[in-house]
Amino acid sequence: MAYKGAATYIAKSDIELHITPRMANRHGLIAGATGTGKTVTLQVLAESFSLQGVPVFMTDIKGDLSGVSKTGVPGQKILDRVQKLGLEGYENHASPVCFWDVFAEQGHPMRTTITEMGPLLLSRLLNLNDTQEGVLNLAFKIADDNDLLLLDLKDLTSLLEYVGNNRDKFTLSYGNISAASIGSIQRNLLVLEQQGAAHFFGEPAFDINDLLQTDADGKGMLNILAAEKLMQSPRIYSTFLLWLLSELFEELPEAGDLEKPKLVFFFDEAHLLFNEAPKILLDKIEQVVRLIRSKGVGVYFVTQNPLDIPDSVLGQLGNRVQHALRAYTPRDQKAVKAAATTFRVNPKVDVESAITELGVGEALISFLDEKGIPMPVERAFVLPPCAQIGPITADERMKLIKDSFVYGVYEKLLDRESAFEILNTRMLEANRIKQDEDDAKSESKEKLERAKEEAALAKAAAAKEKAERELRKGGAGDILGEFTKIAGRTVTRTIGSEIGRQLVRGLLGSIFGGSRRK
Image 1: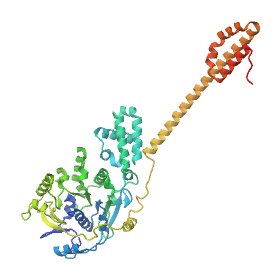
Image 2: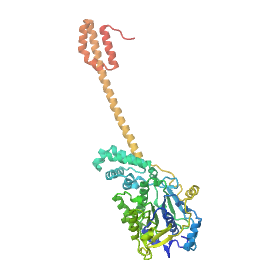
Image 3: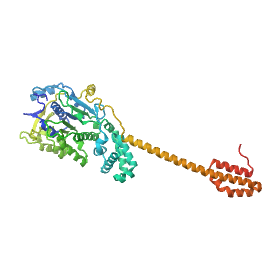
């Protein structure tokens, strides 16, 4: 904040509450019921980190975080809060912003490839069972062994079709591949595509280093992902953010204890990440959260209820801002008690009672001190943000997008040769070879039929000639009997063809004196 020059100043009770930069990568939690001030708290923290030179990634679910890019004009409520808290040196200012959007409508496109996503996260996206996930893993292994690049959804669709058509061959080397599982994966892929996931896969793939930028004044870039449309598919939203966290974990080098984080990552609507997640995925989430702080990344979960976060993850969130909770149901009451027990005791604060009494913008706050120990909980007011509260206009957003340092890098979709093209070429070549083989067989069969027919005609001609000779010597009855005996089998074989029918008519005409049709 721009209060007394202290960028770490976040809230005020009887004392000023500052977030410790060295402990900001020990993760955090912003919780509270709808309408209690979570989004404004997120904005205040983001502005604070930016002033410290720390880049931030956050999702804009309601469409109103874009205002951080514009200097605020304080209304009467803000001015009243500034006066009430005695904030000296309060100044309004904007923060540097980079807009992102999976659908490339309200920001730069964010894409990854099927290979980078990997079978585990794809299985979550596709809602696969264990058997289907196993088949998907085999398909990825087959792709690796056959040098098949998996970049977008059509690559994965082609791969599954290829594996399904060659199940018998692959089963010997890779294990059983169920046709039913292949079919289920293909159907789920179709559903995923209809939800708009095709926009998420392709090239150029997103480079995580583009999140770690500062502006010319040394302020950390606030990377805002437009998520209004993305939130219509919660599974895609949560898996996308988990993928991004995993990429940060895998790509960033070990950093040790830093004076401040390299990046702070806000995970809004965090309950979506854990809903119906299988144990193997929960284990991966816990691992990423536990270890990513050594890469210099702080993760802050934003959710309505602390019970949305598994205990194994909740225990790692050292910096906490708890807004009001409603105790209308047994689960709500349980959440209030659970939240109250997670704070370091402050004799001046009755936490369990206070949680249900907090006003808008008021919170129970406990940050880690320099030694990493939680400070006693304080009931405090979060400071008002310095930038605009609420969205900017579409024209203002577009200007910021076009002025961005990454404008033009991701806008044009690339489509290089990958599994789809390779398998399509192989299929066309296989079809051509099969057609050539079928043509050769057909030609050989025709030649054989012609040879048989010619031999049959030769025999029939010989029989005719003999019959005519006998006609000149004897009676027609004897001749007909002799002809039938000699040429019957030949005529029978050729009777089905036009040549055969003409020959029969010729023979019978010669014998019985008929004439040919003119």
